[in-house]
Length: 248
Image (cartoon, rainbow, N blue to C red):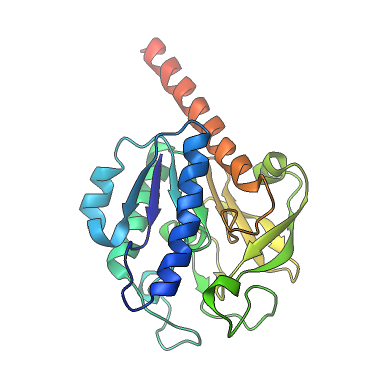
């Protein structure tokens, strides 16, 4: 499994780097405990060519959270409310990995920013800033920025089946959401205020969640269920590949 973060070191944002790094550590430990051999990659360090090479043999991919995507990748405008540092080298690399995963049918999970990367990679757009309360805590230290809220899942979605029902509590911290959907994607979950909070592809094993199942206060077992979903999708992909070899 390839776990892809934006950047591994933020000297000018040490608290944020430490907090996001700890959540990715949790993700790596959970995936490892589920039987995966995990390789962790920095998209900014590797760039597009390097990241594609490093993840070429990955049987599943997780694109993690982080900073806003540079608006140049979805036709947005800079100067929006809440705009921070962008890492366009990382954006381009992660977008390339998602597009290749879609071509190959590689199981892929996007978390927060990763959820948005999936949408942008497949041609979708983002709302650059939302004023709606309840999606993150404002003006607090980074360790308190996450907030809990409910998400209503489409009862016919893979996510509802995977997470065991239509209603889940999540931990989120975001100020952007999906606007127009990328090709082949549908909304699989909505926040308490009706904003999209999860997506999945109609036919490919690609899922995005706007929340953080790897957060310290996330509902126990939620991350494990999502990792198990990737495992099941990878096993199915292997079985299909084996059948193609036999047929050939």
